[in-house]
Each structure stands twice: as structure tokens, then as C-alpha cells.
Image 1: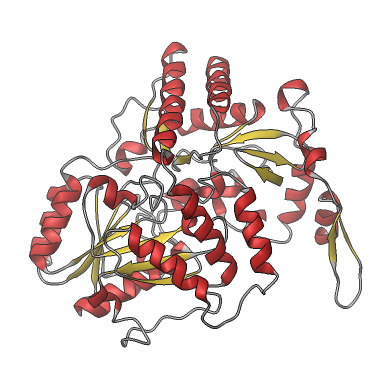
Image 2: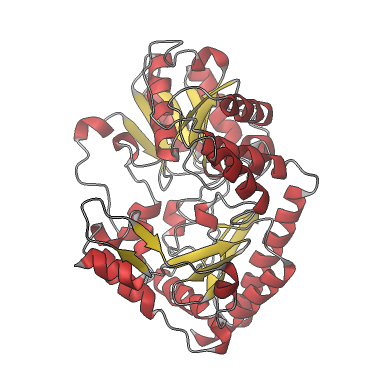
Length: 469
């Protein structure tokens, strides 16, 4: 059976009884860390291949999120066993410097000792109450104090759920149905957002998702990112009908694409003039570009903000918040219904609280900016030395690069990148012990755990691979 094969490959024994229990063969951190490094032996992913082949019989495509299947970069997806700090270890014993960071949450490093200790203490009291707990108040106050636009907040369990709640909220508050989003921006997999959504959709080459009815997207308008004139034209053509503009203030789901200086200001102005709301999807950028997110960094305050990733410290979480008069539309204060069984659970709240505490320490964002800047500049310099056309950039702990001359201002520009070359580069970096996002259309992330040595090794690996490809 596929399940038995997967379990055997992963070192898990399963007893065939009515209520089976799984027990992972214990593998201490010291054993994992003493695995022969990638550079000292032939790179092999045999166990990953065995587990993944079994997984394909159990789960669609063998994964629970499409980009993990390596469809856009080719080769064997890596099955991981453990993480610590800025490093990851796969089931074959290979060690990697990680620049995915669980897709953003691991900003203070994986498996942080302080966060883990707090989680263990919270775990002793229970995993979920399905009722209010004091920890919700603590994290809510921290979020409200940090993020300029948030006066009240509602916790949920994912970024997708946060954006779904925000979408219903802006429609309820304005009494309008249309929304405007940007090509290549991803706001989760809710029907209304799966229009020119970038990220996983772009990675798989799907123009839109089957199963989304026309009625769900008829009210979704789209414009190129960084094109203020296109936005103004859409508002002129749909005057008084647009509930809100949704955007990633820095795009992370079409690769790393920052806004031009005037773009965010133009969005703030046009939405105010028309009585529409401005929604920043800060699931990626929240607490990463600055403690107060992209809105603090750029000095533009939206009406509503969605959050996720970092505020859960590696546990499933999301949130949406905004002005008090808007948020009081949410049940039970108001008529807009939204609920969640595990929302505000004590484990996610604990991890979030202790992650944010660490981010409050002096020098946090200066350090992220330093190591990320050195990383990106080093890779771009390596590209120039080896004759590859590349461009890229970073803001604090978020970065990206393209195999294109640039500049990249929107999704159409991003699609000019040589994705086949990126696939070869990605595979080569794996062999050198560096784990990058397995798609050209994803941003990368650094953490406080990344050391100057990590950056130096990564840049050396990049030059080696770029010479090879």
C-alpha cells in the first residue's frame, strides 16, 4: 500500500489495528546534524524520491500545496525531516541553507528555542479551547500597537481565510460588490481572487482555476501592478461601484516586485476620492519589511489589512483588521458573519506573541536589511561575472531576482524571465546545499538566524552553479 510505503520510507511504523497509531523512529538533533554535508558526498535524494512517489498515490500531486511539487523547476521534490535556525535537513541527511522560511513565517529562524519553550508550557494547558483565552488579547494588542491601520483585529487560521474575511467585510461596509486587484498578486484561493493570480497558478501554467463560476469573478476587475493610470481609468468606468482595491504592497507571488514611488500614493488618493477602501494584503510583508509592515515602511495607511505567517510564529494563523468603524461590521458586533473553530487558539497565539517580542528588539530590521542586501548583491554580482542577464532587489528580509535584464515592475515583466534557466539554477543550488523557493515567481526570505557565513556560502554556491549552467 502507498501509505505503508511512505511510512516505511519516512521511518514510521504503522500497526494495522482499528485505531492505528504512528510513531516516528526517534532521530535526535545530533544525529541529523552529523549527517555528511552535501559538499562531502554525492548528492542523493533517494529517500525523498521513495516518499514522494508513495505520496502521489495518497495526495493530489503528492503534496498539500502545489508549488512544493517542483513542477516549474523540475527534478525531485525534497522531503524534509527537521529544521533549526537558518538550516534544514532532508530525509536523506542533506543539509541546506534555507531561503524559503516556511514561505515567510520563520523570520527569527526555525524552531526558535524561546518560542518552543513557550509552546511546551502552553501545550500543557491544552491545544484549543473553542472559547476565549487571554492570549488572544495579548497578541491582538501587539498587532494593534504595531500596524498603523489596525484599530480592531479578527484572528483566523490562514492568509486565505483572512483575505476571504476582508473581502466580505469591504463589500458589507461599502454596499458595493466590485473589487480591483492586480495581475500577478495572490490573495489566497477564494474564488473571487483567482483571476490573474500569479504564484502557484503561474507556476503551473494555469490561466485560471477550473471550478470557479463566472458569477464569482464577474465583479473582479484587474490592472497591471504599478500602473496608476490603469487604476484611475477603471475607477472612471466603474464610478461608485468598486468596494475596495486589494494589493500586495510589495508583490511576493510573482517574484519580488516593489511598488514605484508614486503608485501607493495614487491608490490611496483614488480610493478616498471614490469612497472605496484600500486593502493591503500584508500576509507576506507584515512584520517583515518593518515592525509595522509595508504600511509603516512606505508611510501609506490603508483602511483594512490582512496578516498571516509571521504573526503565528510558524503555526497556522491569519488575521484581518482595520479602522474600528469598519471592523464593527463583523459578527457578533455587526451583521457580517465569519467564524472559525480554531481561530485564536492558544498555541498560535503563544508562538505569535514570542515571535513579535523578538522582532521588537533593537537592530532587528537593520540586520535583516544587511544580510539580505549582501545576499542579493552577491548573487547579482555572480551573475554578471558569469555572463548571465539578471536583475533583483530586496527590502529588509524579503528579496528576489529574475533571469532577465529588467527592470521588473509588473507580472508581464516578470514573465520575461528565463524560467528554464531558473530551474537549472535551482537544481544546482540544491546540490550545493542551498534551498530556494521552487518557482521563479516566488519571493525569498531571510531570517535573524542567517549568519554572514550563510550568506558567503550561498554567494559562493551561486557563482559555482552559474558558471556550470
